[in-house]
Length: 339
Image 1 (tube, rainbow, N blue to C red):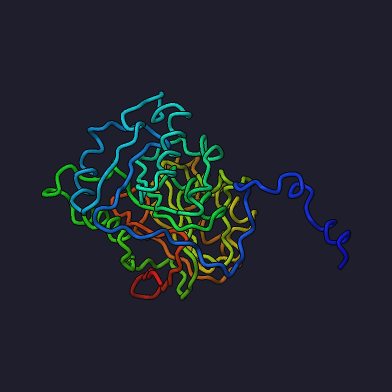
Image 2 (cartoon, rainbow, N blue to C red):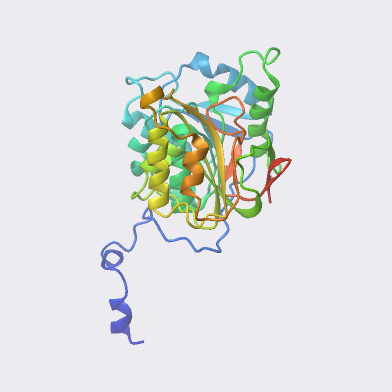
């Protein structure tokens, strides 16, 4: 091929802006996600608020617990800050998160809580330093925005888990499931191979699958469609959860996933906790969550499980997004095992 023909194949945008580093790049299918260094005692975790606000008093139980794990904790300027529902203005949240991304002494960033707001700053964040020296980003709910953006653009693993507002204030009276789920954050950060169990559900579609684990809040994932933060789901295991949505809204979001091809080439589907708005009786939607899901995946043959311990509930274990897992859905229950 001569040089003239070769240049004709290069997209014009690449010639106009060849040095841009934050553009979404196509990921090589066989490329293994980059796993940030696991933490050891003495490492530092930063706490910041990229979305909703929270007070310093409210995060104190999480600070005490993470220090008991042997970690140092740095509290960002957005903790205690407030701009209506947000943990400070967009600029304050952007600068606080950016500072923690760029600080080499901070090995993991714990998002203090969810709410809403990450999408307002994600496009202004500079991930160039993070790309070369990744660190763990931790959180769920609205933090799904960051998990998806980081996975699809930089192929870096992150941790979908409870945040500071979920740590019990009194461990002596905490329920075992609270303790187990909080401890799973420590286990994930320290590099333990994670393994999870879910009870048998008669609506499960049995089977075995392997693939990179990706997912999070359904509403957030749907809202990212068409943006550079949109997730790639082909040959992956997708997990989904949500809260406060009506059944018709869940149906619409699953139709979005189906019509956009995100359900077509999955290796497996995991349905976590869905706290639904009450149906309206005679004027209600008329389908259950199981009905909605199984209708959308009827033409595919990958395994599907329900009642997985992830979501806006106490049974919300830390999951490593972007890391390969094995999913085994059988007659005695579901096993998800990190490979």
